[in-house]
Amino acid sequence: MDIIEILQQDYQRFPLDQTYSIYDKNVYFKDPLNEFRGVERYRLMIGFIKTWFIDTQMDVHDMQRAGDTIETRWTLSFNAPVPWKPRIAIPGKSELKLNAEELIVSHIDYWNCSRLDVVKQLWPGKSAKVN
View 1 (spheres, rainbow, N blue to C red):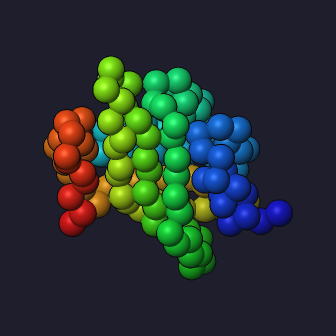
View 2 (cartoon, one colour):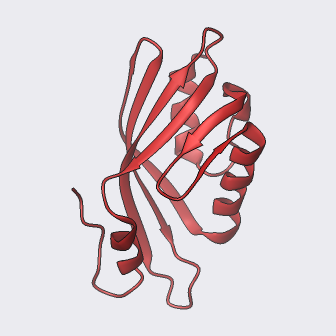
């Protein structure tokens, strides 16, 4: 199974049973809320999502590879862990860089909405503003 097939399967069951062996042990990760190095820290972040968010779903709209770069466009959605459990949607993309061993050495997520747009979704009638 190649890296694209593994990623597609991981996204389908996200955040459950992710394949951490496709990441370099010192993988660089960045998104609008986090920036760190290390697959163990990445595993902890996914564990946080799994523990705190409800009915998490990752819808992949496109996944393309060009050389050592994989770009994925997606929408992450979940019910927030507040009493009224609003559905939150974050549209975005990931840029993954591979090394010669086909391990992911860099995973950078970009959101197509602001952090404030995400917070606004906690109140009824709001949704993510796509840039």
